[in-house]
Length: 418
Image (cartoon, rainbow, N blue to C red; front, side):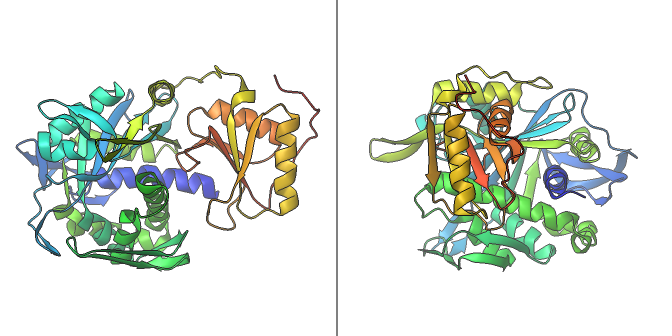
C-alpha cells in the first residue's frame, strides 16, 4: 500500500477509534451501540446497529477536544470530570461527496467572545460553558454546524500509546521543560525515537519553542499520523480489540451509533485527507497572549474547508503567493534549482527556511488553504505531491519540501506564469 494512502486511511481510522473508544469495538463489521447518560456516552450497550458501516450521506462535522487535567495539589491530578481547559481542538469533517476527510486545527489560544465571559481564549470555553457551550463557541467562530463532540483526556494519549506498544516519532529538537504544579517533566532528545505512553504525552504537550501553541499543534498532527500508522501495522491491528476496554474511562462523547458508523464507513472507502490550520497571528492584549484570527484568510480557509465535493478555484495572482522552501533530504543544488524555477515562473516571494523537519521525507507541495494553489506550484516545479496540509509553515501560503526525489519532469520558460 502506498505510504501516502496508508497515512490517509490511517488518519480516518484514528478518527473512528476516537469516536468509538467507549463502545465495544470487536471488529469493523460488528459495532455496538453506546448507551447514553445525560447526553454523554458512558458505557457499551449490546444492540448492534450495522453489519457494514456506511459513510454519511452528507457532509458532517465533529469536534474533538483534548482536555487538560485539573490538579488538587502540585503534581496531584484531581478526579477526571472532563471540564478542564482544552489542550487541543480539532474540527473534523467527513465529506462523502468528494470522499474526503478534512481536519481543521483550532489553536487553544484563539481569541473568541464567550457569552457572559467576554473575550477569552478558546481553551476556556469547556470549563466556562460546558461541552455544548464549547460546541456553540466553535460554531460561532467557524460558521459550521457541529454534529457531535468527543472529549479525550490526556490519559487517553498515554493509554492508547501504551496499548499499541509505543510509537515511532521524529523529535525535531531537544525538549526540556518542567512544570512542578502539573507534575510535568519533559526530557526528549532530538532524532527518531520510539516513544512510550508517558513520552508521547510529553511530546504532544511541549510548547516552549519559538512557535508556541502553533508548533505544538503541528507536533500533535505528527503524533496522530504516527499513531495511525501504528494502528494499521500488523502488531497494532492485533491489539485493536483491547483498545475500547483500555480507553473507556478516557473519553466522553455525545456521538450516536450512526456517527460512529459514518466514521468507520469513511475509513472503508479509502478517502483522501486534507488538514487545515485556522489562520491568524500572535497577539498580545492586556498582557495576555492570543492567537488572533485573520478575518480574510480565515474566510478563505473556512470556505475551502466547507466547500464539499467541489473544486476550489484560484482567486488571487499566484505571483503574490508566499512560498517557503524547506530542504528535507535534497542536495543544495536541488534546493537552488527549485528556487530558480519558481522565480523564473514569476513567483516573487520565495524564501528558504531552516525549519527542522524529519530527514528523509519525500518532496511535497503543501498549501495552507487551497489544493489548486499547491497543484499550480507543483506544476511549475515539476515535482512533489500537492495537498492541503497544516504541516506547512504558518508564514507561507505554500510550503515546498525539497527531498532527494526533487527532479523536475519538464523544463520551464522564464516568465511563463501570470
